[in-house]
Length: 326
Image 1 (tube, rainbow, N blue to C red):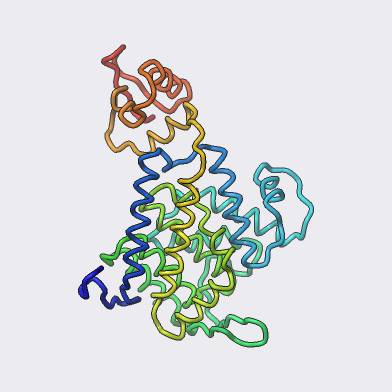
Image 2 (tube, rainbow, N blue to C red; image 1 turned 90 degrees about the horizontal axis):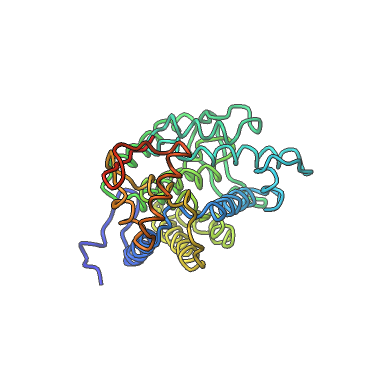
């Protein structure tokens, strides 16, 4: 049981026993991810999860395209459907393929992501609103956002929290998601931007989050998602939303680690290893420490394949060889 000191008041939320418990379980699951080489899942699973992510996030906003249609657009095939829905998917594909290029702590990078995501869908993509906006549910205004003249300062403060706070990144990603929705900095695209930018932040904690369809768990509980947002608006804190999103992150990780794991291909192993590599150069033994179940011959073949594929440079010969990322 956490002490009273551990459950404390923060600027944006109250620390609770539930937040601590969920954070601990997420940490354990990330340990399983790392131990089973799932930081970068096999190619087929990455593609499948990207489609699920795009489908779920856009479906929350009313997009009608199916996973099959999104897959077809991802493969540059022709799809018949509403023009706006197709454009939304095309934009989302483009922005999700650029995830690793965005800087989680940069307001400029954030605005660039909105520009890509909403290009051709709104008049001023990539620019904060200057007018008033409200969130309408049914025949009532569920949330009246702060005045447009305050948006830039509010978002600057939020990015300052994101970069400077001592909270862990997973908690900060949840706070950012809720506070951004409260500020509602754009005339349109706020929901999908909140979910997108949380992923960008989470990727700094562990690369697996690029391929984890947390949006699917949100879509499954869409009514609760909006109820929790509304409850936090009334309470003036993001506590309940943090608890809600942490639970969805946990469920997504549980789903990933429970899947039967197909053996990684040679290129999957190479890409995984290179994504984890911090040293300037490495040896075959270093490679085998990450993949202890493969033989020396397999490791040698993998590294040769990396050279042929233009991923690696080799110095030296035979057992004295060292390798560098090209």
